[in-house]
Image 1 (tube, rainbow, N blue to C red):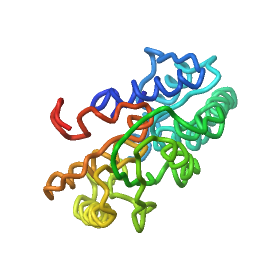
Image 2 (image 1 turned 135 degrees about the horizontal axis):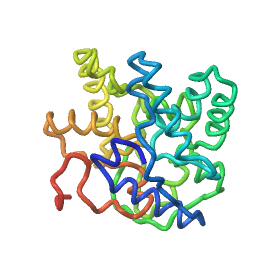
Image 3 (image 1 turned 180 degrees about the vertical axis):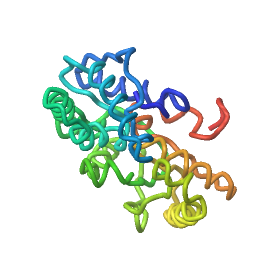
Image 4 (image 1 turned 90 degrees about the horizontal axis):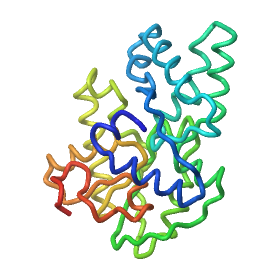
Length: 245
């Protein structure tokens, strides 16, 4: 479970577990797991990143697959962990974990062969392709394939769904003016679709876009794609008070 999901939107975690269990998986959430280390990695603190990665490797030892409802966390484990270690034993363990790590949509479609879900969502949605999931893990058609099976759902694509929303982990903190300009362009692209709901696979991106949309007074609701696919799309949207829809 990612840090942002755990702290800000646990419903995404429950939705991910529901989807995995419905696909026949036995799901465990190891209590020893911690942050994947991406904030430290993006800030250039390799020593702290290695210490965090070592604990994550220990926590997920022995599992067939490690699945995250986040392309950025999944990309960290899959792409960056092996390069953190010079010690051959620890490097081999990192490579083993990388080979077993997946983003949720990719795992459902590419590994488990899931082609449809039993969910209903009456609305017009648009989908944002989060950078890490798209560029590091190749997550593009998988969520759209599953969304096509959701009853009542209509997908309206943005003109530039693959363009970064400006979050970028620590980027939005280091370069707030640039980040705000980027998410402003994204909100305009979202509005042009006429969608009433924005979906994506990374909570960081979703929180960033939800904040901008709310500041602009937009009525567009924001949800993680797993919530809709798991039939949990009737709960409060990201950024809304609980109980509001």
